[in-house]
Length: 392
Image 1 (cartoon, rainbow, N blue to C red):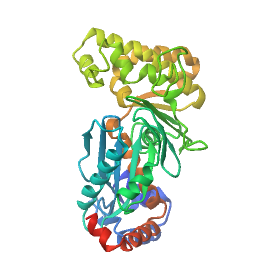
Image 2 (image 1 turned 90 degrees about the vertical axis):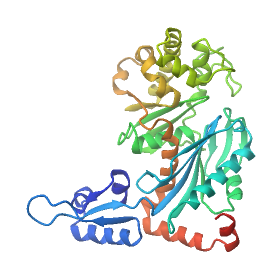
Image 3 (image 1 turned 180 degrees about the vertical axis):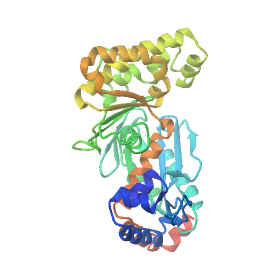
Image 4 (image 1 turned 60 degrees about the vertical axis):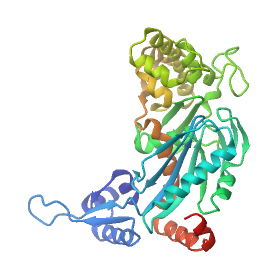
């Protein structure tokens, strides 16, 4: 029932009876327990016709919150997300030229975490700190094994963040593609679709796969590293050291070069602007690169057979321009299977990783609301006074 309210928003008691199959007395008892815990509240329903209106039950956004972060090669995004998926604090994306410096990124995240947590209403329970990174992340220890876009290798990011924050928060580190897939499945373009592929384009190319409603993780949590499938033997050298990776053919640098710009002097926003004003060379370059996007997507669809393919990041932003060539290459490589895969732009755009990171931390409270809250409140109560003062 809590899951229904978290993802669907306010609902009448009658709606909850219909959604859960429980009788009215059971729903009433559950609502009472959740209200006592502070997770939901009730208000009178709207009078329509005869009879007493059913009370409306709604999530309390400030009851619990998550500190969510998205690390990219050029910036760190941050948000405090409340129950029900509400952005309680305006997301801030701080541009930095030191994203390759692990220490600086850790300190920036720790500082933002302290600042955002300090602005939470008294009594709000922080469920955790979750960070999205573009790279292979070993689970469950949160070690970034390899991140070519960041230049990181074997970075124990979760442990570093626990130390930097004084152990105040449960810390989780996830791959950007996986978190984007979770976000699009739960709250984005692929809501309710049990089989989907998500691909995020940026400096690198990340991906995530949901199969039968479950995120595909693989043996070590590395499933979905789609950027490093080889699509063009003897092609460009990739940041990972291999040659002809999909990432090298459709990453931001590839788009920048395709429109006649120098990746050392231009950014992907310049390409987007060129396209927006109708620059013919830019449009032609984006469409040419779109052929490689379609070829790579076709390979992935052949392997995973998703119902929906969601394009995020740069790929989502440029999808309308490269759609003709992308679809042509996609259809040629797939044949009849093409009809089963629907291509969509991300509805969450730059917020996908933040949203996905938050949902990772909300999972426990949705599974066991009262137990999770009891555990977190006990952990917070056991926090030494000097550490509470230091992080206040």
